[in-house]
Amino acid sequence: MLRTGIFGAALALTMIGNATAADIAGDTSGPVEAPAADQWTSNTWRFQITPYAWLSGMSGDVRPLAGGPTFSVSKSIGDVLDDLDGAFFLNGTARYNRFVLFGDLSCAELSEGNTITGLVPVPIGIEGKVTQASFTAAAGYTVVAEPAFAVDLLAGVRAWRIKAKVDVPLLGLSASSTNSWADPIVGARARVALSPKWSVVAYADVGGGGGAESTWQVLGTVNYQVTDTFVLSAGYRHMTFDYRDNGAVLDVDMSGPVIGATLRF
Image 1 (spheres, rainbow, N blue to C red):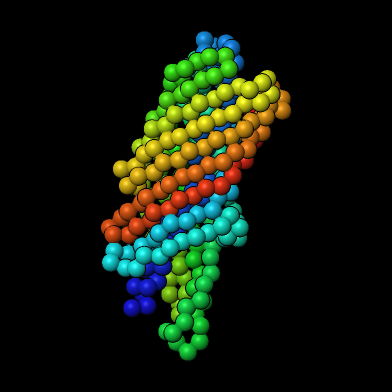
Image 2: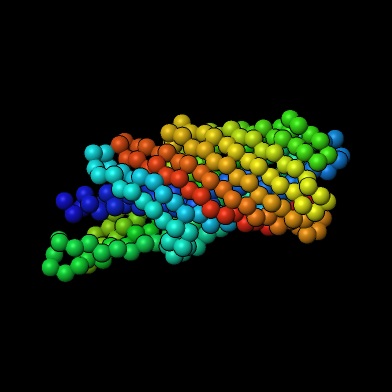
C-alpha cells in the first residue's frame, strides 16, 4: 500500500513538474523582430537569440492514477519560485527573406518536501524532485510583409522529457518516473513597429495529439530597441495544457508575465 502511494506521488510530481516547468519555461517564439523595410527581399540570413523567463502561476486539476482521486492544484508565482532549484531558457530565430526558423530550449529542476502521517507513530518526511527539458522547433512563412507590420504562419513540434523522483529517507524507499512525448503545433505571430524604438508582438499557437490531448497559448509583448542589436521585452502569457495518459490527468491553466533580452545579428 505504501509503495503504491509512493509511485502515485511520483506520477503526480511528474505531471505537476510538467506544468511547473511550463510555468517558467514554455515556448516564447522569438518575441522581438521589428520589421525593416528591406528585410523581405534580403538575400542574407538574420539571427537573434533571447534568454527569457516566464514567471507564471498555475491552477487546474490533477489525477495521478487511473481510478484515483482528482486533486485541485493552485500555485502562485511565489510558490513556483520557492520550488525552483535552477533553470535555463533560450530561444533562437533565423530569417531569410520571408522564411523563418526558430528553436526554443528550456530546462528546469524543482524540489518540494512534504510530510505524511498515520503510517507510523511519527511523521514521515517525503521529498520530491522534478527535472524537465523541452525543445520546440518550427518553420514558417511571412504572409503579410509591410515595413511596419508583418504576420507569420508557423508549424512545428514541441518535445518534452519529464523525470520525477520521490524519496522517503526514513523508510528507505524511492520511486521515479520518466515521461517523454512530442506534440505538433501550428501558430501565428503578428509584429507591429510603433516607432523606431518601440514595437509590439502578438503570438498564438494550438496543438496536441502526440502526448497532450490539447494545448494552446497566447502571448503579447512590448519591446524596446536599446541599440541596433539589443532589445528588451516585457509582456504577458497564458497557456492551457490538457495531458492524459492511462487514466492520469493534468488539466492546467498557466498565466504570468514574460521578460526577455534579445541579441540580434
